[in-house]
Image 1 (tube, one colour):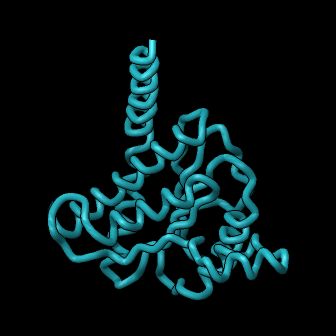
Image 2: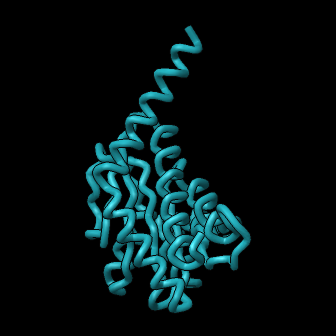
Length: 191
């Protein structure tokens, strides 16, 4: 019985990835091209995730910072939301929804790319950052569950994911991040 359950989960995940690649590869490739251009111009990738996707954003950033395949120069990618001093200070003043926007203020600059990872639940932090990005005409991309209606500003590109649980969405989001990093590595370094 447990082996059948694992096989079912594997088949469901593989089907979700197959559908993602068949329906949205062009969008992933477009984001990869924009990231490549930004890195070539000396800009950064900033990643912000909601809920369970916040640590996934950190993993994706580390893929760009270190390497996937072969030794190569690091690429400037950073995950927002991990400031252990700012977060409690904002929370104390009931301003926690400003965490990501404040961090973007501190380290973001004109030309940086932002990747938002939305987990499907309402998150004022992600929405505030998206609104700030729109006000500053800063490009941003969104990865979210297909079942989620996005109520924030329109992103440059949206990648919709299939999944019913947070774990499924996290795993597929990580695959998207790895795919983007692979596309950028190939474009910049021929890897």
